[in-house]
Length: 281
Ligand code: 13P
Image 1 (tube, helix red, strand yellow):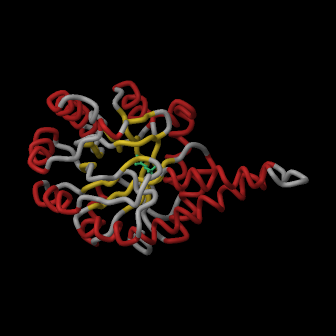
Image 2 (spheres, protein in one colour):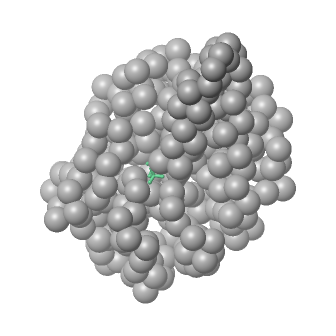
Image 3 (cartoon, rainbow, N blue to C red):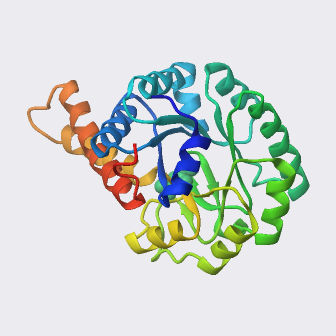
């Protein structure tokens, strides 16, 4: 069933677990997330990055919404990392009510003004707004932020940001990166603890591919209620496609797509288990 992200995160807060938000690009991705969430009886979020929005447009939004509506577990559909008023309007017009306003590349006051404006607009539809404070490094689709431009979230500024923008969830930068970690991920948990103490909204951790069970557990203990996962699911998809294409005779297309769905479903199910959301649907 199509559910509000805000409600899902509130329930996660009460139950001390986190919800997985998985980036999807096409129908195979959507089917894999739904299959894993149903198999685990877990709430889950279908998430669209602006690059996949440009690729799939409104039909992709509509497919995500239809999949969420027809599932027997709570699911929401979320626009990830949007700095564009046009994309946000397109998403809202298509029926999405969960938006990440990403003003993290802007100066602080501009980020506050942009995010506050999105917040006011989305709240007229009783929707959910996530925003990022600090700046995450790494690569996601066509967006790369070099390490020297990354910025950790300041706990005091976070309190001011949440108050002035009225957001429903805060994405934190504590050493997490988008894409592949070049060395063992090392998150700044004392900073996360200070952020949790200074704001009263659920926290979001981007770049959850490659995090160990221990790191995920500690993040949940310090208030992370939403983990964003893209790279590991995408890699499972690509390597399944490459295996299928290497076979002789070449399998038919439905079987190529079926194997890709199975490979992605396995990754998503494992993440759901690590996030503690199994049986929370
Ligand atoms: P990864 O690609 O590192 O899993 O990060 C996904 C993400 O944060 C989407 O916003």
